[in-house]
Length: 583
Image (cartoon, rainbow, N blue to C red):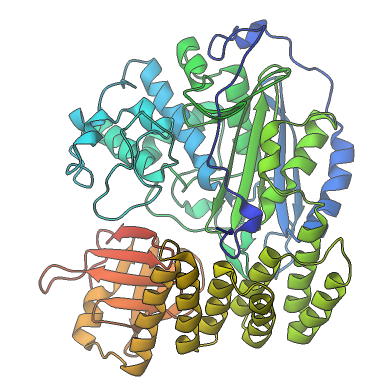
């Protein structure tokens, strides 16, 4: 199957690997940090500072913040570009970003801190500590431990609904799971009687000097936060999370996260046993690559590397890496969906041009001619509209080095439709279907363009053609059902009483619902507000993003106590009503 539209430049690597160590200590048996010979040669930060502005301009990344670590300490920080691409306000070292999945290593470090002091057992089944209703129906959940969760072996989905079932026997395989981290978080909070934010502040942020970091929104961040450019080139600020989630809600700066990377390199804050456990492989997932406890690992020719990347909703992206042998590391946060395309370009300037870990191949190169060509079409569409984009497509198609592939065309079609240029989107995708009539992905992409244009009948026809080619094994049935529901809502508009709408008004963690002039409006964090269109009495389409719907869960005539966000890809995200916000 092709990469879904808009996600090409975020290639999430979900297969990782065991380390093969020949002629040196096995992973987890490395001598203490003080006994190793660090690379004392300084990084050429002057050259780095000159190069980064050029790199982010070429990659269309509005802003980037970066830190370089040497011998366990941050030795350089740099802030480039703008906080908000519209306002042109420069970034600075204190600008707060969403860390996304880079939250996970910080949470793992916290768990290992507690385990090292004997306050938490990594190998005790979590069910013995917390009754977790979402998984109790599956007996296999009794095999889930903290060690299993941190190594992504819980078998739970990445994100699930009210009930979840393990996809495999816990501990027997690898399966990336944010839900596993939430289960462990809830258990840790229950056992300690403290919130994740309280624990993180006490055991991570304060000891490491991470003064501008938090798992929930802090009002003190308000004056200096980054705005991200999503895959459609729309800008939105960091989410103002009101409930901590160990898997993705960390708000931080590159300088603060650099201090954390320095702690990992030096083993600072962890007992020797826990530090070794942190950086030891748990499960082989591909040659030379491994998953450890909340961190990814690679065994290179010169020793061990740890790394992790993150992206939140195709907006903020980030990457961190440390070389244990060299004692050197880096972290950067980018305010764009394609920020991880800079992994190789930035890291090679810190570790040297001859340095090339295996995992870098999981990221698109910032100098990839096709990536730059596609990005130039997007830039033309944003700046000049449909005619400018059409002309640019013709130009890149005339050059064999930049001629769009079928996958490029699908993604450009999705981008153009998302920007409101549906006529051009349909035009190029109809050409793609003519060139590849037996491609289910081409028909799916064309169906998406028709759906964006509001032509649900043609969208359904395209999805059905894709379904016939896939034999019912792909995404088409779900897309058909989604489009049919939208068509039904247009043909038979639903009216919901003001009394019922009033029951839905309130704050559900970082999602806010307001009732104004007889209509509900949805806002997530500090993102722009969007009207909601009723599809049933309790199900609503988010007008500004038709690929998302929200369902309100009520008990009798009481105010709704839960909001369930449903994505067209099947992902479900649940939020409970925040205390004191009932209408």
